Image 1 (cartoon, rainbow, N blue to C red):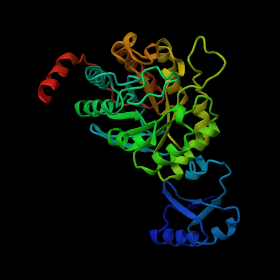
Image 2 (spheres, helix red, strand yellow; image 1 turned 90 degrees about the vertical axis):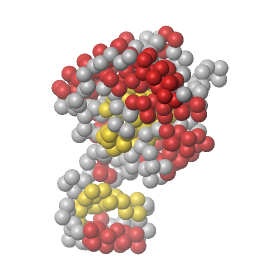
Image 3 (cartoon, rainbow, N blue to C red; image 1 turned 180 degrees about the vertical axis):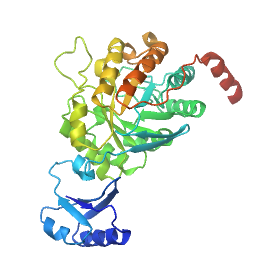
Image 4 (tube, helix red, strand yellow; image 1 turned 180 degrees about the horizontal axis):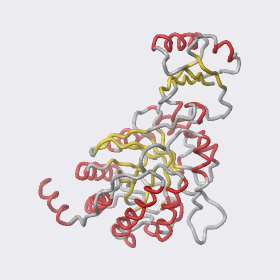
Length: 367
């Protein structure tokens, strides 16, 4: 249930209504929007009479029931007002949301070594990315596949953050590693294989860093939003949804099926920002540019693209990774699409970064 208040409601009146609701064993959550103030009611609201709530104050405009099982994640909970997730990076504050420019996240599937991650970070920043993605802990289907370098890779991501000022997006797989990951990451990623790891969702919800929640390999939209509900219910309002492709019947020509229809569907169901990962969604680098443009066209708020200096030598997901040059060229093309949908940002003029020189200068300084 939500209570819609007049924008002119005094703070004393909001506190009065909140206290009245707490006396009824209901937890109120106040959301101050651009045009309205909304109080979300959390708890067993079935016995509440909307007319009684309406009469609590002359500043109450309307009382509505939220019929979706995902209460906090539902669009009604914020009365249609989209959530803005603000992330502080060394380069400044970045906003994820429907009323902001598209946010670009790029980098390798996994952190392999110092030179590779620094080179990639410098180049994707020069192309216009605001965040570096890179896996320290990698969930793999085979126990014999590369699992990531773990804590040492977190140290390299921290170094890349210091050198470039890019925000860091990296995955947490285990609650035991959450504190270490949160110390480095600006956004904590919960991967597709952990989308319904409810213990992990509660833990990431209880900490303050923004959370990127990827859709499970065979998850319905409702299951995905219910997973987001776990994070929101634990107290963290800063959740970004990521469509990364779902498993369907065709595995020969694409790794997954990128469900772009999910973006407008989500827009009608939830207030949360939406990211698209066309790299995992297709599995092949040659399809990434087309699906990136399509994602912008259907309303994505952000793109996550895998980039590697030499994809043929990548320790994981090389076939779906763009080269540094391909990513730079794609970012120029994406600017045109972003302008067309009025989600454009001021992209820096592409430059050729002498990463080898920069890398060796950094090593000299650290020594």
